[in-house]
Length: 481
Image 1: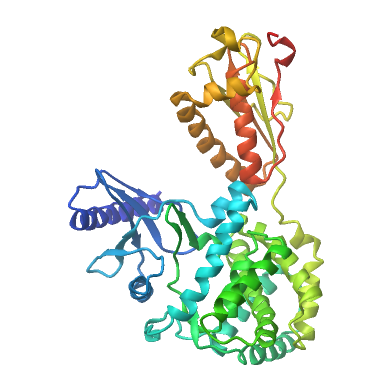
Image 2 (image 1 turned 90 degrees about the vertical axis):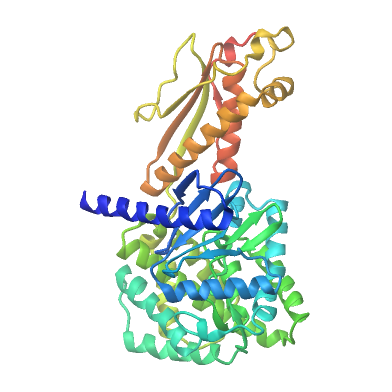
């Protein structure tokens, strides 16, 4: 209880600060200030809205990290790179306002649509922007502001490798020879240090840090950037475990990246690729360290669900693009992880979602899983096409009825609210390992409105969560024909 009270006090303090900053920046009073979902960092974000404008407030007690982000954002903005603008910085150096870029990241779009043509084109745009940040953005940058380190040097690499050792290897319970592993670390870092490291290394260049706006992609969370090689960031993007890009598309984007970067600096292709796969390896190891820290150590189970994807990436790398470095102890350890049933068991739990339509004249469908019925949404407040002669013998599966309901403003409001509630439940159920969720839509006859809504939700969940749901229509046999 005391922790909750302290959290509430902190939120109120933050709200006072951001409301003041917003008023100073916009000239408007804040009408709402709400905390945004917590990310993997200790930073806390708020969206502040006024009568006609909005901004995102960031609170972070780490002042050096704030200084790095603000300086980099101003530098990149001056270079014409798409980053959030710094609107106002609080005198405490622990809070600042930045441009509101909305809520949709590249990862969100990928999750919603799968690897659609639109998503592929967004990835191509992002890959074209990357060398602009690394090469043009790196020109004139004050690397002394970098935090916690100004270069991706031997020390940085060893931090990542030891992060992997202490938070993943040790906590996984698989035994290893520590001295032999350290010897292999030395071999790997010596190899990686051969790469040209004169550029800006974004550090966490991945799909969650690319915001999709009507103006195109915008880039965030570059406060951990430092001087380093080109290969690391493109490896981070293409081998982002949860994005799970097909290898053929990775190869296409890698070729596009080399082509775009070659326009800005000389690249020796063979050497670039040789070191590239070494950076793919260290990036995967760093990510596994993060999953171990958040999942094994902090007990945030949803981070463990990324482990099987990372292991698949390791398997592909070692079998198809081996970095060419002798590292027998490390490689033996990695192959034991790849074949570990325990680590593979952290794969995203299988959640069976049942979506159905029904008639209130009959009954709400029973839940065969025995878990109590889940959501039941009443569609009878929506305009009823069944009352119109031209639609009576049709159903919510037929295009004229679909077009009619889609054109009603009430339908959009209703189904948008349903999507929000159900998405939140599905994400929660997946993170907790639940196996069943039932969602039912009812209307008077179970033929038009409920059918339309059930089909729409099933399609939405299939796209967003890569499910395979076929809506069930319990009154089909009684539809008016």
